[in-house]
Image (cartoon, rainbow, N blue to C red; front, side, top):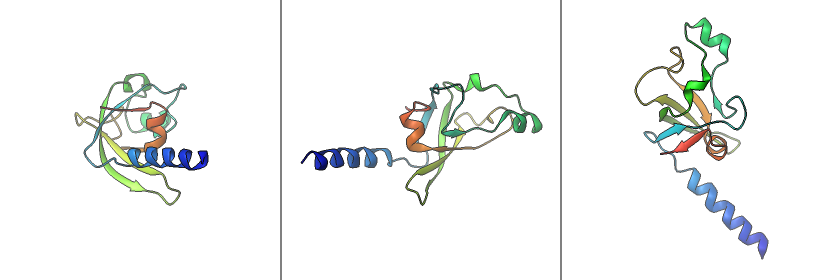
Length: 112
């Protein structure tokens, strides 16, 4: 019986998290470690090559908008994010990708 209750709880959590759609606004939170694991920001050398400034500390608190939602074959939901004010991330990248469920669970993305 407890197996069914646990399965029911997890299925409810999965359905609640998959309801992301284009146009939803989130805030970038503080990662648990030094770097963001589930939001795929470019490495510093790629930012510098494109003329940007690699400062990851200024990301916290930035508002981002979902531009596309894609269901992957392994069951994860990948989203593309752009800044709400229209500026580029680090002055060089317009869009970044993220694993929606893991970023939300670890606090890298915070619902508004």
